[in-house]
Image (cartoon, rainbow, N blue to C red; front, side):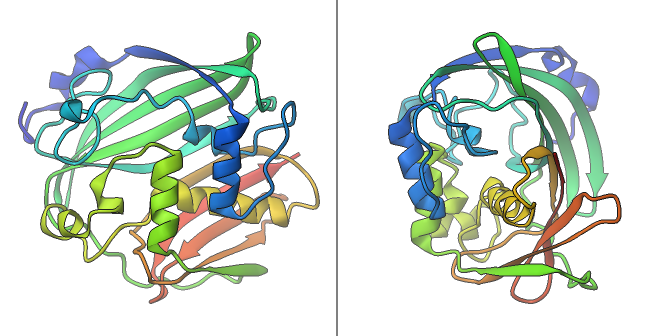
Length: 280
């Protein structure tokens, strides 16, 4: 398939499903906790929100990886050849806690595929729903928006007017932080650790901070200012990339309806990610 094919070429992928089973191992959870500077929950305690992204990775041998470091395309996800893949955003509903130390199940379904055309060329959007369950109970329902873009330099967002923030935190994204997050998520995408590839092949000026990493930091900010309440839902949207060794800020405030507005801003004031959290 080429980058200019119509959306109807991808209809065969709609409704496709994939299942994965994983044990929410405390050994891996200790590594995740160290990555984020958090305390690792004990066996039987709830898995912190969004840490499930570090599980359910189906490992493949290096010979089965594409040139970008992701598993070769054309299996569960559509091939979208000659395009660069990125995670654009998502929506997560927390129904019941996943428990540390027990086996969990994930059912993934492709629920939407759409071709769009923007200033940087053709964009293929694929939405995948993930249902996470444990002991037969649905615990988390998530929709991930994945976008495949033609290999043009990524759009850089200009600085947008800052919203008033009730709280903010500084983050210094070091090469070690990016390495550790790639390791705990078993993410081989080379934009996060191979500087030459990030610059020469995908058009970035430096190593890229993982979108899910930024999203996880934003949900931690929500919990830190949520008066002890648990997350009921979380949604986020990537706006512009963040880069290694360029400090950024996490900011947020409480909306009139009690939800939390959250966002990440790059060193030049550019909006990098926006998010909304509801608590219960």
